[in-house]
Image 1 (cartoon, rainbow, N blue to C red):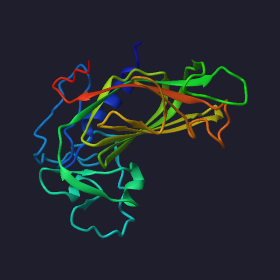
Image 2: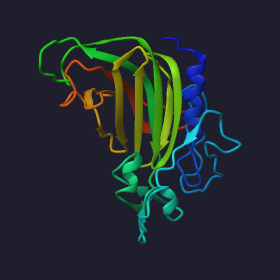
Image 3: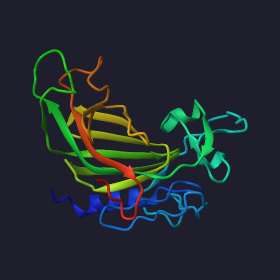
Image 4: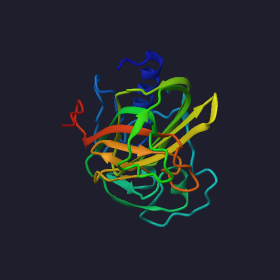
Length: 252
């Protein structure tokens, strides 16, 4: 499937721009050359919103309102840890400011490749829903999209108004412990078609926040089709691959 060049450019910029001092190395698209760097090094920061960052980016400051005082070894992200350590955390996005992680020796870098995102709706009109097995159809459309990524606490966001789904962005993201992905989808012509997915990918291969449909395929919706969400509500099919970081990425 061929996608519009502005969308591919925007998502590619999203992939390469996520970074800060001590953060995971910036990822690249499947056809480019990722920059793996030294897992224990502290690279020069490239922060969205700074003069060197691409236009359109917002760096999300999750901790501006937090008055938590950290004890030795506690962390919200890698900046709170010593060189060669990384912040192992169980939460994504704003929840990181509520609970704290711990600093541990930094392991090798993982890679998550985002292959496609498709809007879906189940075909069964019954009153129950089993997203792990029920049949669904893809419903193409043009939507306003908010895309946010949390790479071990380094969080950036990009708005993509008026883009067509499904898309095959073929971009990837580096992370150490976990990667949080928020995808907000709004249909300007149908207020009942709003979707908010918050999916987490862990270095163990576990996935949270959605329903595993098959290896590399996860379905998600605002409440994953649980009450108070109607069984007929729309959702997203996210197709991905995950493997150890290599240059170029080669998930087999």
